[in-house]
Length: 196
Image (cartoon, rainbow, N blue to C red; front, side, top):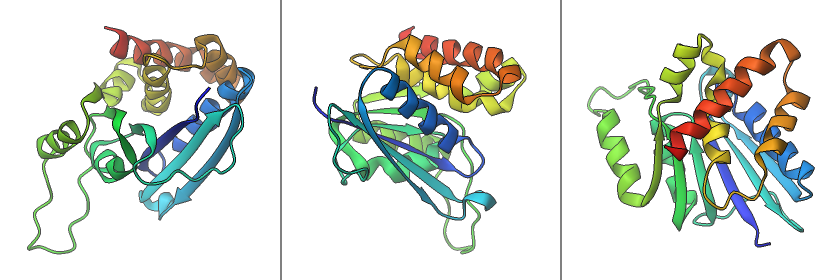
C-alpha cells in the first residue's frame, strides 16, 4: 500500500488531538504502521493547531512535506484555507463550513468573508466536501461532536483503506462510555454527509 498523509487543522478546543488519536488507533487496528505529529500555536487560547497522520505498511517520519497531503480535514474554513499548501494537486478537502472570524489587530485590513474563503478552497482543490458539522452537532444537542462528524466524513471517502468498524472500535477505546453513543451517531451523520 502506498503511504497516505492526512492533515487535521483547526483551533484549540475543537477536538483535533482527540480526532487524530482516534484516526491513528483505527489505522493501527487495521494493521497499518502509523506516525503522528502535532503543531500547537496558542491552542489553549483559540490559536491554530494542526495534527499530521501518516499511514502505510512502514512509515519513516511523522512530518508531511508541503504539497504532499492526500487529505486536509478542516475544522473551520479559515484554518482549512491556511492548510491548503499542504495538499497535493489531486488531494481531498473535508471542510466544516463554520467560520471563526480572526481578531483584527490592523484596522486597515479587512478579513476575507466565509464565501471568499470557500471559493479559495474550491479553486485549489476539485475534491472538496463541505460538511456543516457545527450545524449537525447543534441538532444532536452536543457541540463537542464536531470532530466525530468530520471523522465520519473522512471514513466515507472513496478509497479510505481503514474499515468503518475499526473507526467505531477506536472510538469505543478512546471515548468515555457515557459519550460513546452520541459520538457514534455523529460519526454516522458525518458519513452520510459525504455518501449522499
